[in-house]
Image 1 (tube, rainbow, N blue to C red):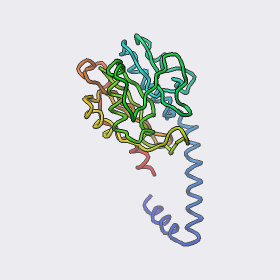
Image 2 (image 1 turned 30 degrees about the vertical axis):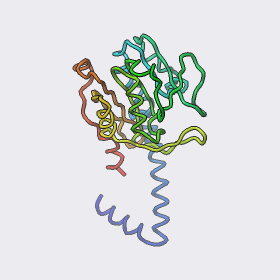
Image 3 (image 1 turned 90 degrees about the vertical axis):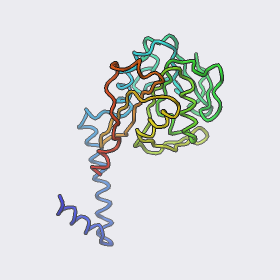
Image 4 (image 1 turned 90 degrees about the horizontal axis):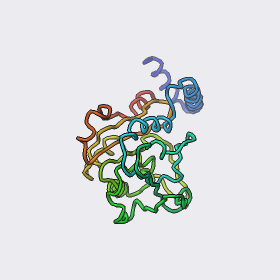
Length: 240
């Protein structure tokens, strides 16, 4: 591949031909990604992958569970996340204001992740679950601290590592793409130890990081898959 790369580099440096070659390469990249998504069905979409990861751990929790900023609680594949936590003694959904915010649903409570968590909600839940919310919280440290404050046991976080910017005017912005190590470090600062972490790293889809952390890691020793820090995005950057 080295001679080809050298030739392509030389072409791209040419004033006119280089611009045409760059445009062709961009179009070829888009076509390749779309084709690989269709052909490599084992490289599932990030949402479906994270749903599968959640199914692996949700059954461990038999206490109260809260889906933080969960909107309608939909798993985007036709189901509800409350059904994943089949053993939970209770299930609550929290939301904020704005579009895709508070829905006045049954069990829906209002929580501003950059504000103060109501005292009666602190450490009320066994598990605090949050799916792709933290990237929209500008004060992400405060957001993580508030999610952690809801739980006396564990938190489950799904965070994007590689994803296009997706904000909604009048509702939420889009600020962060934390690495697995970053998430674990911020959870550690709140007294939580990462007990399971994974990533759907592949070159064809959005990349999520799935993290489970606990104040009581010994309770889950030997029950969850072994933990190794995933290198999210490694295949994207290696390929492209």
